[in-house]
Image 1 (tube, rainbow, N blue to C red):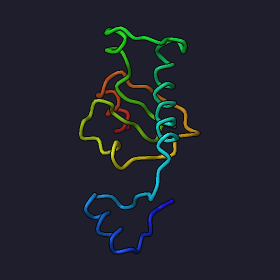
Image 2 (image 1 turned 45 degrees about the vertical axis):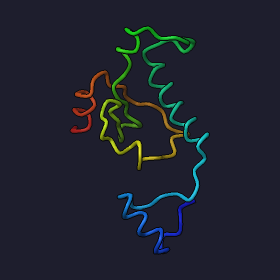
Image 3 (image 1 turned 45 degrees about the horizontal axis):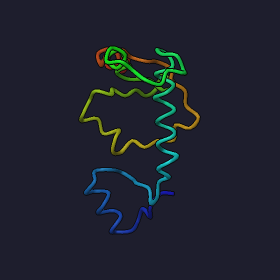
Image 4 (image 1 turned 90 degrees about the vertical axis):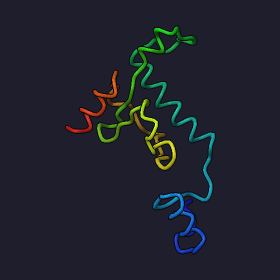
Amino acid sequence: KKAAENDPVVSSTKEYLGVSSYYSNIDIANTIKQYYNLFSNALGQNFPNDKTSFSEADINSMPSGYGVSGTQWMDFNEPSNRMNITGLKDFSNSLISNVYKTPEQAKEADEI
């Protein structure tokens, strides 16, 4: 549920945080589950689903980003990516459409 948009305190907080809207409560467990499922889906394209441990080589070969339905991508290696702060989306029904091995591949796909 979005917080009251016309409340002056909400407006000043949104301005301070640099966001256009925010939610008054977030189901953290559900949010983590959705992002975990995205990550698992991306890994499932490179590793067996029953894999429970990863070597250093495995970790180094993990995807550098992903695409959701070809419309959104995220570079896991970009520290300034605001998706971590402002981009909480409902990914409960999303499937990974592309997995990018390098940040360059993800950026190239975004430019297309």
